[in-house]
Image (tube, rainbow, N blue to C red):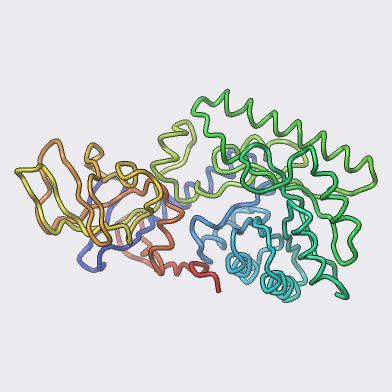
Length: 369
């Protein structure tokens, strides 16, 4: 048995390692906390990239979350299949194949509002090519660059792109999308100040567009670190993602937020080397996200001082300061970045408060098709 209160796994021998495990009480607590932070879920568009799971979407819908944000067409399709009434594909499309697929998904869920995003006139043109001659318009939100310089139109030239959406036959300008993923202020006041600046800019820009006769029915902004500030502002939806599972990155950067680790990777000690004060586990790069620096990719629950010092495809070597776990011991690795960890596995074993495996959540949108 693994015991690290409140995390328990009664029979780890029954789970083939490495495996992703999700602790259901902690998932439920995180969903409740994110809604409590903003007075309910009606001003939230939750990102599904973290979990890619129908089961989590159902939990969030039951909690009253208004809609969802997606990075891939498969994620979009999954949310709508489960019953979402609003979903955004927050990724620009240029391939006609993708735009055609987006339109088919929207048509298959005609009762829902399904949004594309565009931050460039080339995106508008790609959407227009598919929209021409359709009976129903494609809903398109303008993607704004608020400082990350990854996707989106700068405020300086964004009105031109929104006007192009508004004036293109077959397209319907449906609002604004903005992501402030470049800002990770640990200090809550600094975080609030940065978000407020973006809120002011969004409100001013919205008024400008509406003053020019172009409706802006929806504004969606922020991420896991900033969503409360947007969701508490009238007329804006916040967009949390990682908070449903949380990770070391979130805890380190935002210790004030009320979220707990809910997803980990069960791994096993396969060898130990006392002379080097190291153990070798089956936590290789194929079992946990490798985008953080090596030492930040994982922490071991109950051994938080241990550091990952070497990682290959199927091996993870940890350096310990104290006593080493025994060969055969099971360990729980908390991901540094949980979202890319999810795609390492076809699904997650679901653990209840007593440590019993009670379900398996397939990662339905793990693949792109």
